[in-house]
Every structure is written in structure tokens, then in C-alpha cells.
Length: 563
Ligand code: ARG
Image (cartoon, helix red, strand yellow):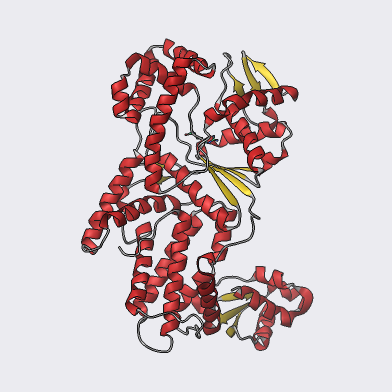
């Protein structure tokens, strides 16, 4: 329910046409402290038209206001502090959620238009790292959020399955690799070869040239190169799938860079037709000086294409295939320049829709404050992290609830959920240091805390073992319930905000706030006491579980019923 609008309409009734209801709504503030009421109206903007001090206007309004949803108003200086009628508001809020259930907060913004989301996109023959985890879980949450506001998300895993690194890998494999070892432990073995390539290339300057030549062969369809590429790709993908299964994240497309191999010719033709290509020391580039950017390198001296060449083809392909409302790229901050160049080249081509492409950057995960790098073999292996998180969750469950059924399953939901939640609760642009022990805690600002709150609320409902009467009077006078009711009511705004900023952390932070508020309520009221508000209190508990579960679902975190 929109109580701000009710308050604004009431104020409007007494102030005439000087300010519209909408203008008044926008002026309303949320007081910092509950002693100042639930909404505050600053009277400054009316003082000119009425030629009166705002203090006087606030006092006069205080006399006139009368509304079923308003309990009392207090003029304090130039402000009018408004206290809502808790019973009327809680009744409406609880009825609304009881009838809408998990559709509460759905918004009709997207008209079912497509939003392709480029996400996860790890590189073949390298382990999927913590950085890719960020892209995966942020992308997945954004897909859920845009769906909640009415768009149709298309989750695309733009695999790094093409590029010069395949030349390096082939050289490495042919020089030092063994088929048996690669079959036994594909990613670890391929990574070793990749790392060794870089070590040896420091002293052996021919290696880079050899790698370039092999990549060129691959692009030209050489059979040996193709077979090795396909083998590396299949083995890697199998390993990636294990992790996606652990996270329970699916994709609509695995069209990676290689998919665009036969689509780059057209890009080059388009660029030629617009006279955008120039030659720079044998390489083919698009000058972007006008945009304050470095030139985009479209082809190397030997004719080999580049990362951006494939992204140009991919952008055009996505526009044609999905006729997108927006096209998102959930990729680390360090690639900002790349996406600026990408958009600039598309603009040079006169493709107006490039305006609707958005790079959604995110910060780095560090360990002990240090950056992790694949080249030096310094990475956190995601699979290990998720397994360790599950172990830590088991330890905690053994302490708290040793007789829990499906312990293993719940531990997975808690451990993995903890890692995902931790990633999402920070503003996505922040860098953060990863300390697993802090992530998997049942107390504090963690995913398990939210899961635990939901499980606790569900257990209250089980204990009550009472059919909820949703048609009954649902008003609550309880002061402790009030904060929780207001938070629940703000859920649609939270969704809107998360969508507008492409920021899942808005939902994660909200779920923590709602959990804290609910736990305070639980600690201070006798929810199960048999009196005339029992049914309404239980509906509030139920409403809390609905919103907590929906928040977790949007974030891609499971909500175990017991833990
Ligand atoms: N594979 C790249 C990496 O790991 C990310 C790809 C992002 N998507 C894109 N369309 N460029 O750095």
C-alpha cells in the first residue's frame, strides 16, 4: 500500500492546487527516528505561496489533517511529523501480501521485452575463478530482478573459447603436455601448461610467435588445431557445469566467442563500407580519438581477429536475435575501456541501439588484500571454496541442530548460499577481501542469518499449527510489529531501486534489515500468545517468510525450511 500517497492526498486537500499530490509525495521524507513519526512533510515549499513562515503552515496543517490512516500529526518547527495509524496500515499491508503472495513486488515495467545478459563467461582451459563467480551470481540475480519487473531475461554465457590463448595452449600442449594427464585432470593440467608457457616465454622469445601462428591456423580451420581446441573446450565445459550445478544456475545460451567466427567478416565489411578502417603498422584499426579512446584493434598484422571483433559481431547478433530493450554485460571493472570502445565503434557504424547496451562492472575479490591472477597461477578455485563453505556449514549445523534431517543437503544450501549472498551484499563496484570463515556465519550480516530467520519464522508457524484466517481482521497495534510491517510494505520500492541501479545488493541489504527487524519483533513479543491479535501476528510471520524467501530467490540463494 502506498501510504505516502494517502498522506500527500490528505495534505493536498488542505493546501489547494499549489502543489500536486505527486509533488507533495516527492517532498515527503522518512524521519531518521521513530519519535518523529513515520513520514515528515517539510513546509518550506508552501511558505512562498501562502506568504507565511513554514512553522505557521506546519501548525495550521496539523489542526486540519484528519484521515483514517493517520493517527496523529505533530508540527515541529517547519516540519509536520505524521504518525500513521498502525492498525489501518497493518491491516491493508497484510491483506495485500496474503493475497498476492510471492507476486508481491512484481512490477509491469518490461512488457516482456528481451534483455540479454552476458554473464559468467569464463575462459576455456582455465579454472573458473572468484571473479567469474561474481559475474555469474550478479548476472543471475539481475536476470531474476529484470524478470520480476516484467522483462524476459536471456542468460548468455559468452565463453572465452577463442583467441590467442588457444595458440599458447596448443604450443604448450605440444611441447610439454601429455594426453593421459590432461584426461585425468583437464583444467589443472591445461592451466599448468598455460602458466609454463608464460614462464618459458620470458626467456624464449620465439614462443609467442609460435603461439600466434597456431592461433592463425586455428582460425583458418587447420584440422589438428581444431581437434585440440574442441577437446580442450569440451573438457573445460564439463568442469564448469559442475560449478553451475552446485550454484543451481542455468543459461539460455553458451554461444561463446568461437560462435562468432563466421560472423566477423560481415563486421569488417560494415566497417569498410563506412570507411572506418585504417591501417596502423599492418594492423587494422578503428580510430576512436573523437571519443577520447584508444583505437579499437580489429585485426592483427597476420589477419587474426581480436576479442573486440568478436564482441562487435556478438552485439549485432544479439540485437538481431532478441531485438533487445537493453543488453547487459556483467563483466569486471577492468574491462570498462573495452566496453566503451565497443559502444563507440557501434555508434560510428550508426547503430543507435548501442545506446541500450550497458556494461555492469564490478570490483575485485582480493585475498589478504592482494589481487589474484591466472597468469601466475594464483587463483582461488571456486569448486574448493564451495566445498569448504559446505564443510563449515555442516560444523555449525552439528553445533546448533545435530538431529536435523537432510543435513548434507541443507549444509550445501547454507554453505553455497553464504558465498553467493556475501558476494551480492556488497555494492557491486566495491572490492572485497574474501575470508570464508566470516562468510559462513549464522549471525551477523550473512546469508545464513537471513536463511535462519526464515527457518525460525517457519518453525513458529509450525508450532502454532493453526490454519491462518486471511479474511479476518488483520490489524496489529503492536509497536514491535510496526517496523517489520513498514519494511515488508517497502518491498516493491526495493525491487524498483535494485532494477534501476542494476544492483542486487539493494535486495541483499534489505533482506538483512527485514531479518533484524523480525528477530527484534520475535524477541519482544509473545507471538504465540492466544489473544485476539494472534491470527494477525501469524499472518505477519507468514508475510515475513514470503518476502524473505522471495528476496533469497531473487538473489539465487536457497531457503531451507529447517536448519
Ligand atoms: N571471457 C572474458 C573474461 O574472462 C569475459 C567475457 C565477457 N563478455 C564479453 N562479451 N566480452 O575476461
